[in-house]
Image (cartoon, rainbow, N blue to C red; front, side, top):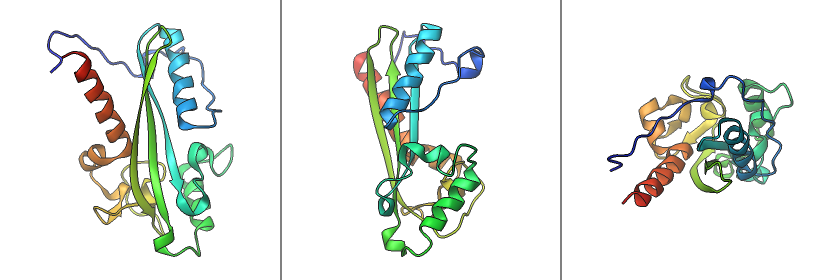
Length: 179
């Protein structure tokens, strides 16, 4: 338990003058670390930042770090999904393995940081389903539930997703430090 420790969390909307951060790293870690450094330099606070995306086995890990801009510079969730489904159109279900990956950074103003990674295995379905979530959720089939991530309730998704797993590791690390 974190008794006696006062923690306040603020979203980026609390800091409207943070400069735009270009995600040009080669890895999720690169991008998460860049976001954390920029925000921490601006706020002089401890920062939690992440980068995440989907890696498709059949595509050698693509789109990976390019997940949000997979279909080009003006990509939308819909155009990214459309491109992905086109690339997998003749691929059988057993070869459509996918991993949602999240790298989370806890960054301190002195430049030190810790990273935490979460992975969620599944497969890419043949067509979008569901209206909850964002990104590739409508085509990411979670085998433990037999439905897409976009069909899961937020409570379930937020307990099993790649981000949930990364945050659970962060929480455990913080609890160990205050014992």
